[in-house]
Image 1: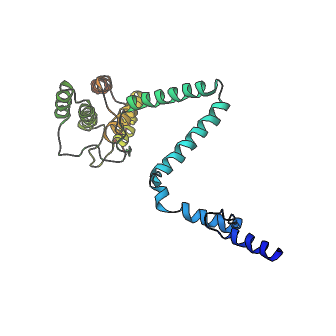
Image 2: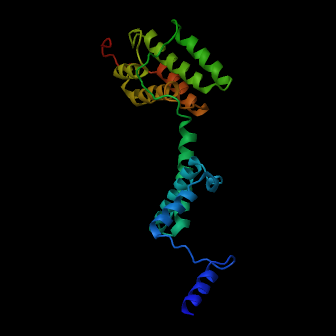
Length: 226
């Protein structure tokens, strides 16, 4: 009878439709199988691209930076925003005052880049540019008129390749009372011509006044310039 009972029990366990015992997989092989499955392209079709991930990381870094800066700034994030606005306004004011930087001032280029012309020729050209609102050109021509006038009065020896700074320094020997104005005029010429500065009516008026003043100024006789 015991043998018959064992046979019935064994047969019943093998009958179809009966639940099968669970399959137990070790932890490490299971993890590896899951990783292989999740690495398939099917699961990553909607993932952000490399550029988007880099941008996300960058903005996270910027956000963390502002959070740390805000905690260290009086007034917190609001105080930091106020400081940023003030910095932007200061940069805008400098940009408006100095103009668009296009070329670094060198101060080493020749003052005259064309054929010989008289001081009156340069004055006429300067006034024509000023009347048309071309202030940069007007400033350049007025500075050339100043130097050419000094050459015509023999206060400067005509010398090709002379720069505005050199002319101002040499002219100051016989016109010491206007040394500072001559240096300022040369600096304005360099800033407008080589430094990307935008001139205006006020700047041109200063050079025009200096030109007319120098024509009426008696020079200090110190001998021919070196």
